Length: 69
Image 1 (cartoon, rainbow, N blue to C red):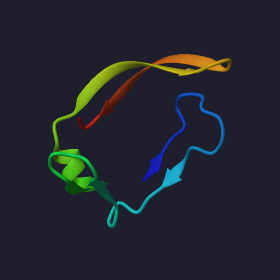
Image 2: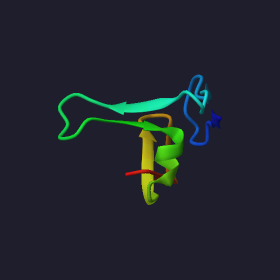
Image 3: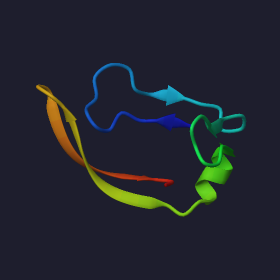
Image 4: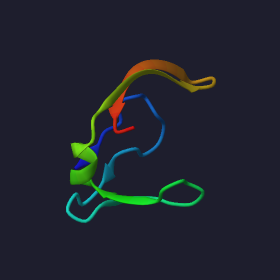
């Protein structure tokens, strides 16, 4: 799975991950720590938000972000 550079960011932004072994871990000062696989993340209801991404002096981009809340 490749996460693409779609917002005009500077520097290397493509990240190659192994979807079979990837785990998102939410830890630290949180009410409920959790660990999710890609499959578990994709089963969650999606959230879509309009966002303004700003890199001062270089660009401002209105985009649409979709992901898991």
